[in-house]
Length: 397
Image (cartoon, rainbow, N blue to C red; front, top):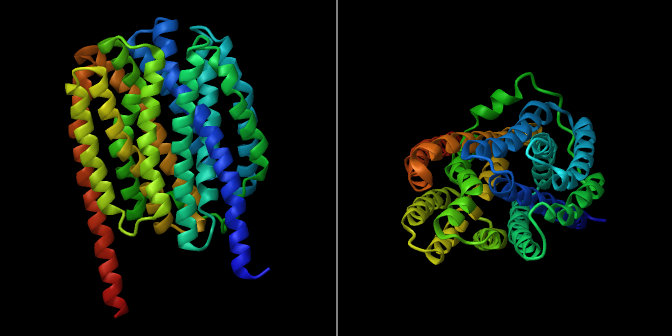
C-alpha cells in the first residue's frame, strides 16, 4: 500500500468511527441537557435557581474530568479512562427514568463527569491526520456530525413526547450511550512525546488557542443560557407545548447543520472574518428574541442563531489544530473543552440568579454587552497572530 492509499484508508477509518461515536454522544448528551431543565421545572417543581443549579452540576462534572483528569493523562491511560467512562455513561443514562427530585442530582453529575472523558478525546482523534487539508476536513465533518445529531435528536424527542412522558424518553435514548461504549474500543489515541513540565502554560500562551477560547465564549455564553432557559421562555411567554420547544431546538440546530455543511465542503482559509460575523449575528439574534411578539418570530430568530452556533465551534477547533502540534493537542483540546464546561457550569447558576431578579427577557439583553467585550479580546488575539505571521515572513525574507 503506497502512502496515498494509506492516508486514504486512515481517513476513511477515522471518519466512520468518529462520525458514529460523535453522533451517539452528542444526541444523548443534548437530549438530557435540554430535558433536565424542563423536568426540574415542570415535573419536580424546582424554582429558577435550582433549575440553573442542576444544569450547572452536569457541566461541573464534565469540567472536573476534562480539566483536572483527562488533560494530564498519557494516551494509554486516556484510552482506559475513555472506555471506562463510556461504560459508566451507558449504565447511568437509563437511570434518569427512575429519578426523583433528590436522586436526579447524583445521576446528572455522574453523566456529566463521564462526558468529560469522551468529547476531548474524540476531538483529538479527529485531528490525528498529518495532512492539514484532510485533518481540517475531518474536523469539519466531526462538527457537522454534531449538528446532524442536534437535528435528529430533538426531532426524535418531539416524536417521543407525543407518545410518552418526559422521563420515559430516556429509556429510548439509552441506545446511544450503549453504542458509545461499543465504539469506544475502536477510537485511535496518539502517543505524545515525553511529558512536558508545563504543557498547560505552553497552551495558554498560544494566541491561536486563546483566539479559539474567546471565539467559543462569544457563543457558548448565550447558548448555555438558551439551553437552560430558552424552552422555559417559550413556554412561559407563549404557552407552547413541550414538543414545540424540542421542535424549536431542532430547527435551530438545522441551520447550525447547514453552516457546518458549508465548512465541510469548503474548509475556510481565513477563519477570522467568520468569527466576527458570528458575533454580529449572535447580537442580532438576541435582540430579536427580546422583541419577538409571537412564537413564529421567536422561531425565526432561533433559526438565525443557528448559523453562529454552526460556525463558532469548528472555527475554534480549526484554530487549535493550526496553532498546536500533536504533543500539546490533547492538553489544548482538554483545556478548551473544560473552558466550555466551566461556562456551562457557571452560566446556569449566574443566569438563574439574574432571571430571579430581572426576568427572562432582560436577562437575554444582558448577554449582548458581554459578547461584544469578548469580541474585543478576540480581535486583540487576531492582531497578535497576524503580527507574528508578518514577523516570520520578514525574518524568512
